[in-house]
Image 1 (cartoon, rainbow, N blue to C red):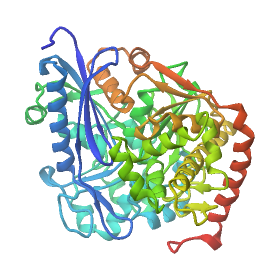
Image 2: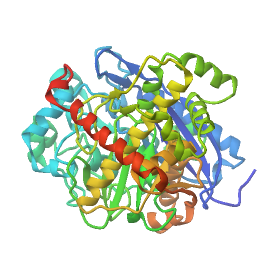
Image 3: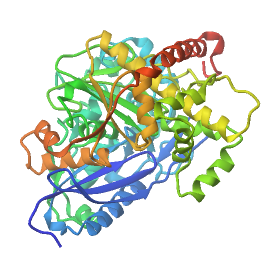
Length: 539
């Protein structure tokens, strides 16, 4: 067992699982572990989870990862946390409260992707309060104030009984340390906290119908707000026993999961301001760091102190990215048999499709030729950026009667190119408004495939950089742990020491004209989908 060095545990809670990784001070991961977490889909747009279920999954993952690492628990100097931007509702004595029609108090989390508050979001946007300047002018139903307003209007007994409303990362650090401190990442990005002024705006909450929170002095949503990685306390006895770590182990203020991917990548090459973090998972998030605020229509932010302390952040992305590709290929008649063949070869379904695409092409860039005539706008859950339009939907054009595996591959490649064109739109509008970038630094499970990386470089026209870390989101949380433990003087120093670039995928000039033509088609199809005539019944 190793005792002579200091180690850090990163905890990542995604949509479908909780993970833990043990890292040394150079950013190398010694071991990791994972537990699935429950997710409950109701009719309509309701998606819920359980705080207790997630906490138990975290504890099991941490214990397994530490044991597998060969590190003594006493040599773990700190833990850091990231999680999806989901709303957790807690009542008296920490008891969970039901947030939906199931009436099950264990289901006390409204998941980030839950769009039950779409109508509340539209009303808040229509109100036009000045704080909306910092979310691209449009509030999203994925943010927390529309969800809180939905609770007040539809489940007033839950709203009134709640002692605390947490973003999921802050809930986890509270379970670990007992501290009610909120991260400036979570409350600035998802709750309209004005970090650059260190205050909530009570006029906003009163204007939208959440007077109670303002009247209470915001005690239920956080009165102590600190930068990510700030030590907010040590592990409490009960939490320490559950996690298998010593009581008093440093706990750092957390991050939203995508932002942890940013912390785990943007310091790998050049400066953070030159790099766009692109976290390609179930959804995708783009994070661009600037020294001065950049107001970009349809892009969230500028947020101060939300990822790299002392800098501003613009956050875009796609509400469905990896999930959109999964959904797209599942629609094809050949998907069942292809999935079986993938399993026989020991490959994931999408890795198998990438393998087929590359096998039919001289170079990864040439795979776009397989999608000739097939065009996809993969906005199954709306457009998060740059249009901030939750009601638009996906478009698939160019399908014939072919039900072969080759047709499935064409649909897959077409979907990936659609993801890339959406990324290009975000990059271009940010540059026009003062947030240019030199490169994309990719992370996330859906971004681990070389075909995906090359297509993103070709479609966006920007180099895509891959870091050495196999789990950059976990690394981002471990960097927070190192900060909480006092191992580095600031986050920039920690990122510089613990992150490194491994490979760069340059845009291929030979397919530039192909993508220019396809991008024009993408824009036209997207405009049709967003037209009043094409709107789905929600509007």
